[in-house]
Amino acid sequence: RAAFGAMPEWENARVPVPEGAYPLFLTNTTQANFKCREREDCTSAQPYVFVSKKVFLDDIQFRGVISDFHPTKKYIEKYPDGVDVQEDGTSGLLLVWDEDEDYGQNFYLVHSVELKEAVVAKWAAAGEGDAAGESGGAGAMEEEEEEA
Image 1 (cartoon, rainbow, N blue to C red):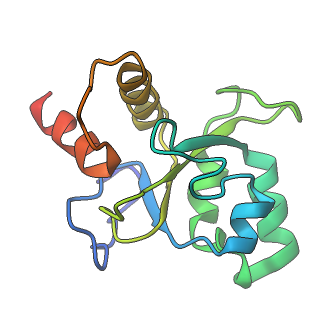
Image 2 (cartoon, rainbow, N blue to C red):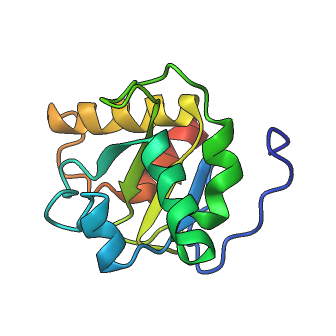
């Protein structure tokens, strides 16, 4: 966990939170604004959305400390440019619905390219039936990382 300094122990997390993930509680308003509503935009089959780095930073600038993403500002700013470029020309970060709240909150922000690729690959494989019968959620992601 040295890449961004010591990460806090996450309250209510049932499994270890991997490097590059930041658990967040997102209000219904934030979910609607970011098009990541539970069971609507984010589902058990595809629990994530890509959100532009600029959109996150604009929300933080506009809403300040009341932004649900304010605690993650330094991680969003450090996310490399040119990765999953969105319509506005900025890099896209992954916002993942943690349906079972394995990491202690209802969502987590993926702020590392390596973890983003692993999460996307996991859900792509699950969509192809490779993970038939698996409930999914963050815990399944953690188990795969530990086996690697």
